[in-house]
Length: 119
Image (cartoon, rainbow, N blue to C red):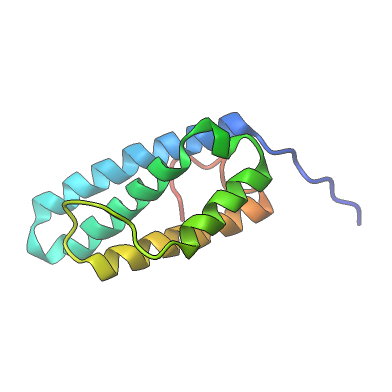
């Protein structure tokens, strides 16, 4: 079987990041309205927003290799400075989880066309 790999689409990745950034902000607002029991959901959405914001500059999305390298750097980072979160450890765990999932998407170069839902 000969499968042709689809080329890296920089615009599609940027569009996907922008849509996920908007969705994460909406998820944070919804979790904030739900109160104390939704603190984990708030931290998860804040982690997704932080990651999308860190990956948005055009220099990182130009090539698949530069995007993957930036993700690798973010995963290896010790701490992720953020304000307004409920639990630092939980936030760090969620950032790394989102980064690893995005690294898998980047390696396979698939999933960026789906802007309605991440998972």
